Length: 122
Image (cartoon, rainbow, N blue to C red; front, side):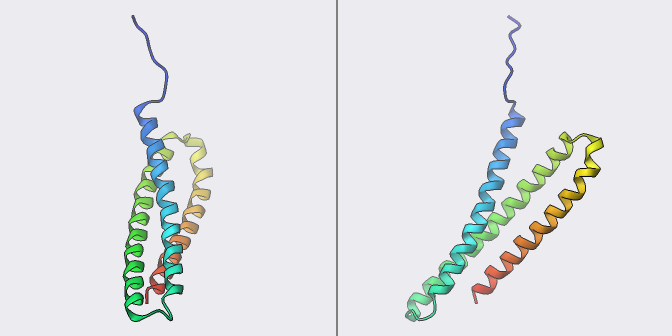
């Protein structure tokens, strides 16, 4: 009668799922960048028909890279929201600086990597 269950809440499952999507999208972005690089190195010296197919494939992979980057961004915003909600007010200022530095580095890596991937398509 009055039995309670103690276990993960729906919110915990949502956070775990969000973190999983964030990590998978990060890996997808990196893998797509690697595939674009590999395809760009294969294009010179192949027959024109094959070069065209490789170029189209690289462009498709680039758009997958962009989609993965969008997922990283959206799930990252969700992570930030629950991080702020769960971090003690006294700890926010100390952790905020590290979080800003981390995200500046990520913008440089993701922005630079995405730009580099775009230059490989030419």
